[in-house]
Structures are given as C-alpha cells and as structure tokens.
Length: 555
Image (cartoon, rainbow, N blue to C red; front, side):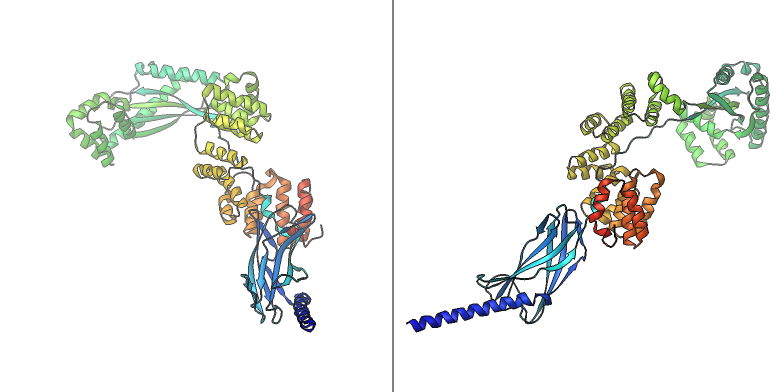
C-alpha cells in the first residue's frame, strides 16, 4: 500500500516537473517570438487608439498543453492603460481560446485603447503569462515592446466653431443724379420759353443750388441726352435727335451760367424705343400687352413702327399719351455725396447716435474697439430699425465674450436664416451637443457653418471630409492646415498657413503646426525656429516635450 502511494506521488511530481519545464521553455524562448505593429507609431483618432498587432510564434515554441494570457499595455509616466486581454491555447487544451500550433503560427489581433492624458509619451508592450491547462502553474514571460508613443496631433483642432457676422451696405460715396427735361413739339427742335420756365427746369436748378452749396456733394460730370419719338423714318429722327441735343446745350448754357460746373457731354440717341417700352408698360392702354409683344418680336425699328401703325386705334392713343413724352432732351448732373468718414461715424455714435441710419450704425459698430460701445450701437439699430443684421452681429459679439445665454436670447428674436443657424450650431457645439450642432450646420451651409463642421469632422476622425469642408474656410486657416496635415497633404497645409500672413489670429498655434510640417519633412532648423515662436504659448511648450511628432529632434 505504501509502495503504491509512493509511485503515485512520484508520477505526480514528474508530471508537474514536465509542466513547469514546458512553461519555463516558453519563458526562456520568448525572445524568438516576433511582434510587429501597424501603425508603427500609434495614433489617437476621435479618442480611440487602435492598432493591428501581428505575433509570429516559431516552431516548437507553443506547448500543446499550454495557455497563454497576453495583456496589451500602454505604459506612461504616472500610470498605464490596459486593453482587453487575449488568450491562446495549445491544441490539447479544452478551452475556447485561439489555438496556436506547436509547428509555428502567425496570429493577428486588433488592439484598442481608450485615450487618457499622458499616453503621448508612452511604451506599448505585450505582457504574457504562460500557464498549464489547469491554470495551476504559471510563468511570466518577458514583456515584448511593440511601439513608442501615441500621436495626438488632431487634438490641436480649434473646437470653438466659427461665428460669422452680417455685412453692412454702408456707402462711403453715394452716387446720384439731378435731372431736368425739355420737351419739344412734334418734328421740332425749337426751344420753347414755356419749357425753360417749366417745373422740370425749376426743380433741376433748385437741385443744382442745393448741390453746389453742400460741401459733401460734388458734380462729377454733366450730360445732355436727346431723343426722338419712334415715328417716321429713322434717318429723319436721327437728325431731329441731334438738333434737339444742340438745343438742349443752348438751354444749358443759358440756365446754368452761375454754376461752376463742367460743360455737358451731348449725346444723340435717335428713336427712343426703350423709353417707348417703359411708358407703354406703365400706362393703362388697353392693348399694351400686344404692343409690347410686337416690340419683342421685331428688332427693326421700321418694322416695329409699321406693325404698331397697323393697329390704328391703338396708335391714336399712343400719339396722344406716349409719343409726346419721348420728344425731349435730358439735362443731367452726375453727383457724388461724400458720406460720413470713419472718424465721423465713431464720433456720431458717441454724441449723436440718432443721426445715424441702419447702415451707418452697422458700419460704426465695426469701427469701435470697445465691446460695450459695439453693444450699444447694435442695440440702437435693433431698437430703432428692428435690424436683423444687428441682432445677428450682437449675438456674435456675445459669443466672442462667452455669453452664450445672451446670444441665444438675441437669436430668439432674429430671423432664422442661414447665418442664425450657423451661430446656433456653434452654441450647440460649445454646449457639447454635437448632434444638434451638425444639424444646424447642415441646414445653414454658410462658409462659417462649413468651417465649424470641419472642426467637428476632425474631432470625429473624418479627416478627408474635414479637409474638403475647410478648404475655403473664412478667417484663420489653423484648422484647414491641420486637416491637410492629417491627410498627409503637407504642401497644402503650408500654403494654408502662409495665406494668413501677418493677420493670423493665433500665431503661436500656427507656428506649432508649421513645426509639425517641418518635422515630417525632416527640416530640423525649421522645426526649432517655429517651435521658438510656438513656445510663446506655455501649453504648447509643455506639449512639445511629449509630442511624438518631435521624437527625432533634441528639443
């Protein structure tokens, strides 16, 4: 009995020794296991770090009765992140793990880590524990280094969104005309005294008086344009129009002697078919649609006149109601009004804001630097003119100041147009509601909305879409350049950054992107020169210490 027990114990010890021996062999020969990783430098995309790891086990390595537990780990200063454990087994193990043949085998696995701050400078390693099939015996394998560092360049995106503003239509110089007309009798170019003293000439001369006495108004040119009514031969009417031009010039010389203005440019237009069409269109003539149709059907003036004369009853009405008004000379003064200058607008906004119309208020708001003054001007435009543009610009001002609630209140009273939706999208974005933000941006379609959507695309790992959205983005080109970097279009990224010139709103951040471009191109001197500019931002200086983009450079 004692002898049998002794045999069983010896056998058990022998089996245990064999088990330990096989695990130790796997431990000792772990260096023969080959591990590769794609990408070779890990990249964080939309908060996820994903890699494909390929492990090649050599022949005679994996024991048929062994189980291997593999833990992917990112080790960084201050902590580590583990991915889901992987399990493998020899063919004689009755588990449901991936089977590895003792004859050698290559296994490929998808590895996923969630981003945590600090992994930028880290080591990706595989930790293995070999064990017998009952998991009573274990042997810890040497860690296998897979990769160094995690690229988080996409996190440089400016996430605040782009808020646009409505432009004003303020005219610094306003063109206008002053005009009087001299009418002529049928087939005549003779000046009639009644016309020289008529209301049209009185109004014209009064306008000249006002123009020449107003230091904001300047006569830039004068002209006389003479016409004939479209009746009779073209040759006769051309000659008659020319004579009426000369008569108009005589009238000008007689009436405008006291004004220091240039002599007029005299033009003879011949038959006034444009004027004819206009007067007919404005008239109450019963068959005016028929007349206008004839004009559209024929371009030859003789054919036009013949066709209209054939409508005898209509032509009688035209002779009395339309044609007399076309026998004329127009005396015209072209005028420029010098509107308020920038300095005047700013002063009026302070001292006499009621003197400014809507366009002047909108322009004045762009000229002042103090946000409180801007707010006052926009509110004046809203109160006095119910200006929708002022509402949107005031909302943009509030967003600039971080006053989302105030911006929402103003937008609630504004017309829900494309610009309003773009701003609402930015508010949703800053509130963390990406779904609502994307909806607003899609409905808006403005360049600002596209730029804001481009930032979202970068955050969500849609780099090609972002590059397309941001190609023509207004304002700062930081995000445009970043999108191009992320899709590997370095020349386009450089061009985007260079297009900002001296007007770059975030020079340190743009310099950091230039340093990344230079690093990827192997231009060490440019890397250091741009990082010196970027270091004006303390956060960027700290980031650069752990940035895998600069791993090959001694910073």
